Length: 457
Image (cartoon, rainbow, N blue to C red; front, side, top):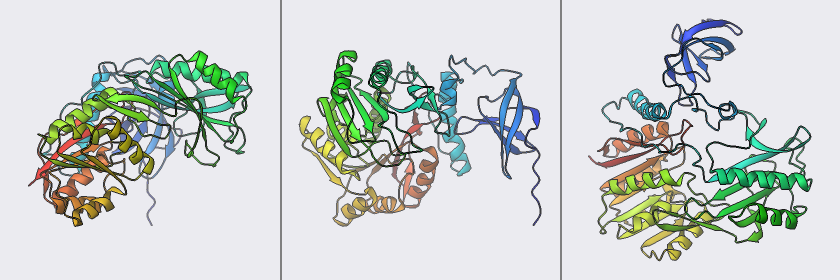
């Protein structure tokens, strides 16, 4: 077998011009068409790069010196935002971030020979920072004391951080109150190597409209020492707090939350609003982390569906009913399906609280329930899908083809699986009828959501 020769070697220093950005936001340098990925550089910049890792198909490089700067480069005041993955696009100006996200989708369409599909400019935010309404920060014992922060990219090395830049500042303040109380009462941080210690994670949620705060202390132990004193300290230090919960997670796992919750103070839940609908949020609820952009995303999807009160709609992957209940105001009947039983309980409760009686929710795998509904003869006018990053199962697409709704609205959080699924939908008779609309749900990061409207060919 012939030995593969690559044009660079580890430790080599070279000067090159950055050609592009990857979907993760790393710069790409080409050496004889061989790609070298380099963090913290932008297209058009000339840089001195040291090769740090070499494989048969690509290499990694480290920025040594920037020789020319892109006009799109902005200075970020704390390098930890880049290194931890809090703001991997933080060096790119916001208008350029929006273009990068549009370009990402265009490039994937081109590779799939779907160049005829148009992509609209990305819908951005007026203030593209301090937007996250939920934080999950790990806790570790470092340098002689308990620390909260964020992991360095691709590792479990904690970087202590107090101002998280993309989170609601009130959440950052609450985390510091909790951290200082844990220090005061000498609560031991969980050590994932030994499986010992008490506190694993601090989760804080804050309603964007309601301003209600929930603090969740995730523990490795059934008992939280000084629980009453800690709860009292949070109440006096966090004026907006409405709920303090201990979540027990005794498993040696990367999963953040366990299934056992004990309310230490206040309510079991908090509330917030989306598109004028009240939602109950528990520690385990999935709730969109950027409500301002979620409203734009859902309004775009609802407008695209063209509802006039006469249609039957299926919402696959309905979660706690966020899209379903917003759609229900404009439809005759909405059916929602979701695999997480707790989410369906929340969806039913949210329908009740908002006096919405034309939405029906069932627990199940979206693809299995769609096939079941199809066999039962359910004929939706509109199908809305908002799948996880892995995209849609082929059986769901087949069932959709047989149900033959007039419109399918695809809300995507992963352009790669979106493009694959658009090809599959084409094979069952659906084509895209409007420019794909990207929405920036996560400014300063490479993630992009989008809304696609399909009709039967």
